[in-house]
Image (cartoon, rainbow, N blue to C red):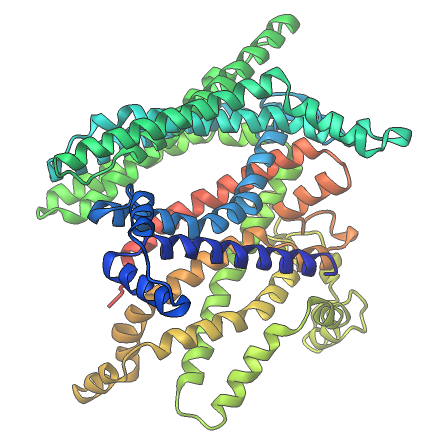
Amino acid sequence: MRTALPIALAIDVVCSVYYTSIRSFDTLYLPTDARKHVYMSSAFATGKPTTDTTRTQVQKQRGLFSGRQGRRLREALLAYLFLLPAFVIVGAFGLFPILFAAYQSTLRGVNKVVGTFDGLNNYIKAIDVLTYVLGFWGGVLLLYLAVRIVVQGRRQARARGEPFWRWLAPGLALGVTLLATLAWVIRLLPLLLSIPEQMRGARNTPENFRRLLGEALTTPEVMQALLIALGAFLFGIIVAILVHRTNRRRGLKGAYAGAFTGATALVGLAGLLLYLTWAELQTQTAKADATQTGLEIGSQFVMISAGFALLYLSWKLWQSASGRSSTVSTILRLGGAAMLLVGAWFLIAELPRVIGSGDKLWWYGLLATFYYAIGTVPLQLGIGLFLAVLLFQNIKGKSIFRMIFFCRLSRHLSARQPCLRSSSSSRPAAPVNEILGWFGLGPYLWLNEPQGILNLAGASFPIWLAGPSLALVVIMIYGIWTFFGFNTVVFLAGLGNIPKELHEAAAIDGAGRGAQFRHITLPLLSPTLYFLTLYSVIGTFKAFNHIYVLRTGAALGTTDTATIVIFQTFKRDTRYGYASALAILLLLIIIVFTVFNNRFAAKRVYYG
């Protein structure tokens, strides 16, 4: 806190000075009427009339920004200047950590930030053959997105009757700029991170630091990448200006360099991902030939890929069945989708073998995360919606209840978890065990119980089928108790945006409260429900604080979600590269869930 406050104040001062300086840019290039007003004001203030020389100088200064096109260029430039601090902050604190984690995931070594390059071996340790599946199809997906961007840009240009391929050269140059900048960062980063290792003891001097920093910045490989980035950027900007001027003379306003820039960057990333996948596959093949052990990578790769392809075709066929006018056609499509689904299941059945050869701690962490998400999100949303609808009614003291639910969000975890630990203790005399003892149940170990809830009921299932452990169930209950108040407050805000006239009109037509809730409240509340669902799912996959505080060693790791596994790998085992690889995998899982949520839920959102 002591360090963050001065940094925040410094950033605020720098941004204030920056915004003040760029406002002067807008004042310098005012329109004609406003400029006359400035001249008159200046003459009135100084008592000296403005001369023609001053006006001529200003006109020369604003030659590039004259006319209607100049005004548009000035407005665009000012907009980007105002957004530049946001881009810098998001890039430094949002994008750069992800890129650094991706870079770190390709390194190996214990207790080393700058390890030796190891390719995709960290991912292979975690998910085995799935690394090749994700690497290959991830590269194909990036290529598909690149082609899609170009096709959409061409379609848009054709609809407007404007040239599209004229922007190819500047777009390619700017795309190469992005890739070369990424290469520059990747080459410079290890050299910068190795500087602290070279400044220990008597070598810890400012002169030595400046020398090492200069050597890192002037390394031939670093300078080569930097010069390529600067050259491509200047070439792209110059060509883009020339193309823009040519189009302006012909009355054309469209600019499509961004499509080629994005496509070039995606193609470069796809090539890098496919190269790393192919290089790792060649390495594993060479190791297998040296040890004379066979590899099942090819068959597993084909089976898993074909299984997911059939699963996608089954979903598309099932989706197309709803638009059929013929009953026979609908039945045939549903039957075909079911057959494809069965075939996909048999092919994807290879996954358990692949999972078994990966890191079991990681897979158990993902399983615990899945249980935690399934067990908390629906109940949090359901309880929050019920209480919001209840508190939205005309009842006495509803303002007090709203304040109570809002105030409970401000209580810290350290003030809540002792209450849960004491009430659900494993001691027979604990409050929860005593209450269950009245009904002839218990006592249970609660936070110290590693068995799944189905096995506690008398069944005998494997770990992945036994359900969440009782310790994880207790943490899930705590999570629901902690976060449903936030959902209640957000649902109350959503209910407040629904016009009361709709409910009054429905009541006049004879609709009861249930019909009003089903046909009016829920459809108009769907944007809020969609937001909270997405927010809650992402939150459960990133949940850490309360799980880490409440976990116990007696639970035997059954409460360790994916974030806990990543933290333990980083903090306890100091395997920075492997922890970064697990973090990237978790990020990919969150992205996949977000995309599926957008595809399925966004179509059912009604915005009125």
